[in-house]
Length: 328
Image 1 (spheres, one colour):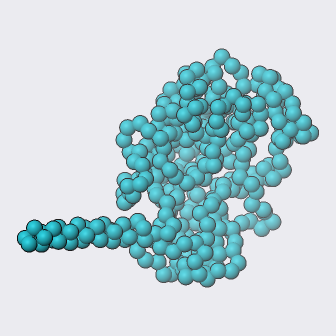
Image 2 (cartoon, one colour; image 1 turned 120 degrees about the horizontal axis):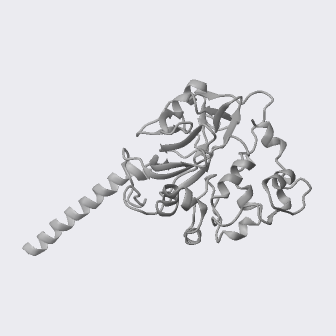
Image 3 (tube, helix red, strand yellow; image 1 turned 180 degrees about the horizontal axis):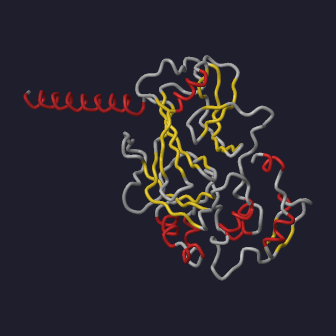
């Protein structure tokens, strides 16, 4: 009989602990329907006269981390999962947020937030060597702009106008209804309207050489990614041992191949010269980028494939859209 009661007592304790853990999970993680963790640079290196920046990211230390998300704070390993960095020539930004309600929920209202809900923008000054960081409260910026709006999407694109660099923010009226795109100024942390008679262009292109030339066939897997940066899959790392990047920028190479680094092309427009300088580092050191390079018709002025042997030939046949030129 005593054994039976002991068993029941142990079972009650176990169930209590399980219930406590479930409650902990609910109030710390599962409660949030929309969530993105804050990240920060673990290490970084500028390359090619500051035309490129390699960053290995880690999760910020001041947050509760779910056990299902791999830790990348120590040792070598793949990069943490994170959303796109929005960046130009002077600023690079990431974001972090957590919300109890999903976007488009009619009850989502910035005047009625609870349980530690937030949306923060982390902005790094990449015009200096120190990557000075500021953090802005995006929700407060939206309230100051117009508190009858709420954010309804996490997608953000880069936009440059009048020597200012922005990330787009998509808003909609509280309770649903009409939406609009506004601009978050990465220098001031303020929300601004899109200038009159200016259309939001497509984001700058950094993948023309890797996607629209015969260099695409050289890489065993694509190296450009949805984060508008360059990263190396394992198959590409294996073919990179004789690259110019390893010889000229060994620290950056190690960050890319051993610490899941992301390579950002620091420009506020589609810049063919910058792309050629960067991709010249991502091929064997005894090769030249413009050596019988085929440029596909999708990016040429006449819509035909062309074989080029110099940067001058490349730029003479390359089509850069008016939309990209007008953005800057």
